Length: 589
Image (tube, rainbow, N blue to C red):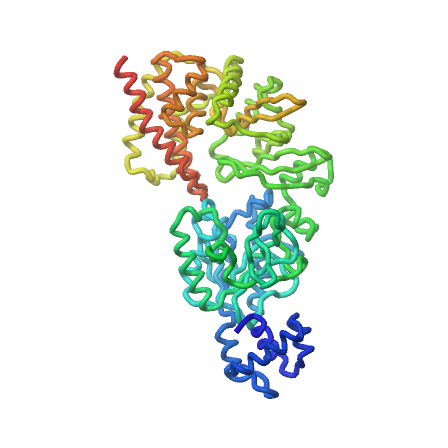
């Protein structure tokens, strides 16, 4: 049975007295298609002349109709910044009703009571759904590091039978999109164009990947999978979930057939206004200007600083999530700015009063733009947005020369502040945040012992003890063009404090994941030649100590669902390998 026949059969059951014209109006199919479908259905035994739908037809509809649903609500909803700091996207209220509540009511109105909600970020806030709607909560603990294909694979592992609706949590439908009767699998697409979409609907009602130069259509995200198709999807999801190449992939990728480069389920298309997707603060504001969730402290701070109504803060968009913070771009009075908001658990890691002291020390010295606003209590910072910025390419020697020159210029200023960045103290501090849990590395205690053995040597060496950036990684060196001239800034001074300035060299190298040859090249560039064995050994000691420090930091951040993949492993390797490199120099001298 094709989708045209299926639509006609369902309409015949709902409206037994309908004539061909009425069936055409109700389904949207032409009279020719309606007549052909009626002949097909009668031939298959699902309709019988003037008697209408047969028992076989009713049984076929029952066999394929919806029985259960999966609602995907695990993610951060990062594009909802600054709202998502306190409220998961699914729990946003629009016109007095939470998004997820409306979707669950619409599912239940269509007769679906077996509903699984996959949660992760702020999972405890969804607990009320169990009692209110009788849903099952399925927890995705890897919501911070894997895309929603993992959420779908978790659901697929629990749901073995088909006839399943798949529903993202960030949609609002004015009319109920779910039906008591479905006869075939489909994926919901919107008629409106989307330049960021890589798919469109062709004349055969298939979802196909766009070719270069073609415009895509918006993927709504709702899908229905009948028994056979759910089994196929389930097997593919479970397979893809075991392959970490798919960690950043959306679940819809499992609907594509590789050889045909199109989905193996048909498209169902809705008009733009029928399915409203809420992904950003401004989309929520456009849909419901009175929503209580628009009351963001960050937006209020911006409005007060620039003395404008909140509605004049526009073009709000999420920037790439950093390792410590979240930041978003906004426009006010025709100019672009960036607001920095602290990330999860950051209040335990960074002293914002000390950060403000650092900015006072470097103010007006050309190292970076002075902040437009810095509020130590909240950790908020607003800075000017630089157009056409690129970060340092750590593999480009010309970039390295320029960045090390700026670092040297900063060190030569011999600035001072009232606080120190204590590397060894921070190693212990981050470890204390594990709250008694052991390290994920079996040989951690031995590695830490080795790193601490190097401290005696470091303490015995001469040092230039001044303000040190500490976070001097390639991504924090910003190249930009202003007035036809290339300029360079050093940004992100959160960890800066008094320390041996040579720590910045070690930090740059380990952030860049340099091997030993690249690390030695970096050292030569900074010193414009070979340093003494004593200085090189001291820097190696810093690489080992700072590697362990950031490894401990990564282990702490894992508690918040933040995973750094190769970065965390490489930091731990620095602690072990550079202990040996430092000892080799120390032993021969």
